[in-house]
Length: 390
Image 1: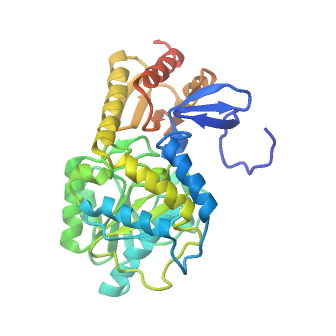
Image 2: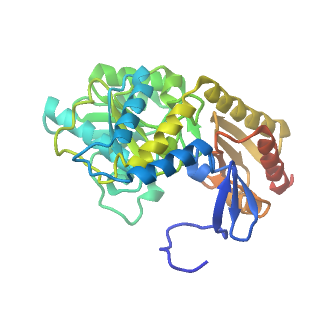
Image 3: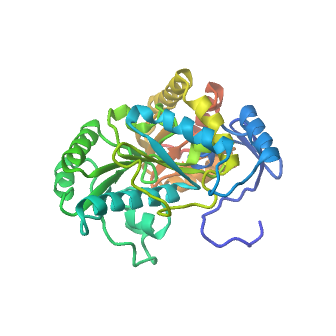
């Protein structure tokens, strides 16, 4: 590999050329079973026929139009996305390019909502320790992991972190005289696949409703079917004021979305926000296929079943190097007594792609279309590379 990229990633020694289903092939023709889905992006795997057809057809018709206008496909995508989220109260959407952009938009909505209703000084946004909300200066400021902050300050002011699961700490932090919003991941991804407790989310929703503090769900990684419901917040029975989506929403084409409910759908006005490529027709065409596929109840049931199959197999091993298996749907974390990265590297050699989350956790985010046989193949490889007892 040539040294032309900035040194921002701990890249593994492989260059991919093509993919099919749940498999990738490198430039030497070696095949790899993918348990990463491009970090939850390629939710329908590689070469999904209807996705390929939609993107190819759209390329021949229209690949971009400025946001002073609308395209037919972007309008259809926006309408279908809002309809998919209507059951939790969403009414309108802003289309962006990425999860970080979506979360930036959510923060702007929160601050304008509070400023216009209550005046200056009520602008703080509470997030959780262990959270991850993006790599821009503001979304880094919102991220509750100090390791991501090193070297990049000063950050956007006004973010406060509280420990997940601590209802009393959350109660104290959500001060209605200074706080505009709570931004929360239903399942924290980057810190190790940590689902929030039902009681915690219920309390958070009640605090926010009582104090007119916006409840904002970051579903960049855990949304669009990843946890077995279309939106992860659905499993908790709450209706957020704002939801952000990205990653799997267009199955591999860059996209982001900020959805607003009754309080927030009309907060942003003319000129308040923008995104040159937001609502791109290619992303919209791909997104329509993802929505039409993933929303189907039988498809979501299969995500839940496959995820439970993975967790059951892992637990059945009673392996001394595995201390915990957790997750929802096809978003799974596996805690190890050893460092995760060497296990990940050994798996790569054997033809299995895995992710880590922190020092001692493996993260599984396979494409939704993975088969039972491929699940068994992948876990057989993992078992073979785990260090033996002792």
